[in-house]
Image 1 (cartoon, rainbow, N blue to C red):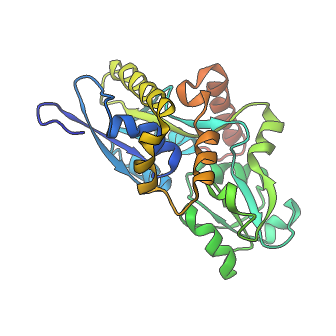
Image 2 (image 1 turned 90 degrees about the vertical axis):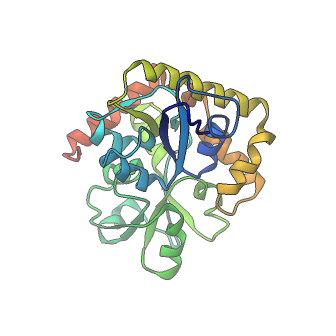
Length: 273
């Protein structure tokens, strides 16, 4: 909430249930960042990535791949991120496809600067017919025949089979088998125009917000449902349970090692921002 007596911090995050669960306490509840009022903006993750390139927001959620491009402008926070095991992007199709089919396939992806795009390129570097839609447009691209396969993120990983699609590969599982590390999807970063002391205040506030949400998840539900795509409570809860985990509280050594591994993999392929 914005208080006229305090300077505001613009905070950007996605409308996905994991983000609205994490930030409900900061936006609607008792959690505060001392000395600041929070001005929340909710956008698709790829739009948040592009806004970070333009240095629009003070604090923002963005893909780890995008953060590599702006880390000279934005410091990485330890809390609020989306990474872990069993939560990676999934390549899906309406018919059986394999990795060998990718060079000739048309692939719909949820944003050029998403970690999903980077992972797909690492898995299938010969796939050149790539195009980008919002994450909730992947199913439609497949149904219309515009794409042969798509890379899904967020809640789509829980619903693609009931929508009539099949898995080609779980990119998160592929990453885990290759590195033994969690997959770093999205992070929270603060603009370097703010002093470093703000980082600790933000980390503490985000952790407090997560703690309150876990203590009373029902209190978060109206805010989550107001922004969620059409989904059942079962899918919504599965989404939160999958993407809000120990790494959301603190990246820790394993999380930071995973980020370094992602950066190194991109650099080795010549795909650094």
